[in-house]
Image (tube, rainbow, N blue to C red):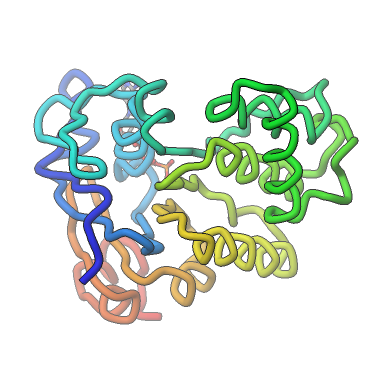
Amino acid sequence: MSATLLKVDNLSCRFGGLWANRDVSFSVEQGAIMGLIGPNGAGKSTLFAMVAGAQRPTAGRLHFDGRDVTGWPPHAAARAGVGRTFQLMRVFGSMSVLDNLTTASFVRHSRLRDARRRAREVAELAGLVPVLDSPAASLTAAWKKRLEMGRALATDPKLLLLDEVLSGLTPTEAREAVEIVRTINRGGVTILMVEHVMEVIMPLCHRLVVLHYGQKISEGAPEQVAHDPAVVEAYLGKAL
Ligand SMILES: Nc1ncnc2c1ncn2[C@@H]1O[C@H](COP(=O)(O)OP(=O)(O)OP(=O)(O)O)[C@@H](O)[C@H]1O
């Protein structure tokens, strides 16, 4: 039996009168690729922000790697092994791809030589070698998404939070990105991903959690979730 890496336990987040998340509970097992789906405004990004320490929960508990980490700050999350990408990409535009990766790997390495070595390894894994010396600002959206994944990976996460890294890509780019996600996962990194592209997420994820108006309405294997009447009604419109 595999161990639980992340346990979200009745987690809630309220902004004024609005519950962005309410009593959400689920676990992510070590080595899994877990998908978090739901309509716009369902609370996916807020949940990510709580896991990554960028947002304090209003109620509930969060356990990571066997520790209660509820309300932890972002630097503690990064140190403990939570890496994340952002929906609105946050690469350093004037810096090269290699320097962007190197900067991220300073989370684990204090010496430049070590950080550079890790940056080059990550570039191989994330398929970034062809653009290693390009300024990040000159990259297309698809390359920038890869760089976002690479930057998160360069922090050597145990858990990688991927926020819509497959959306807005051409079918070929999406297939390549899926392979990168699989490679990262095979390297031992557990993945929690927010995604809208169902055709891509269904074969990739081992399990899905569905949010709607901040609450969990379904959880299970992709096939099972795609046929859940509550999910069809709230999100999919029709069974896939
Ligand atoms: N900082 C904030 N202050 C006030 N309301 C917020 C804040 N962040 C999010 N919300 C609200 O909380 C709800 C959930 O938002 P969230 O961004 O988590 O949803 P989402 O599922 O990620 O949506 P999308 O798919 O559009 O990214 C929305 O109604 C949003 O307007």
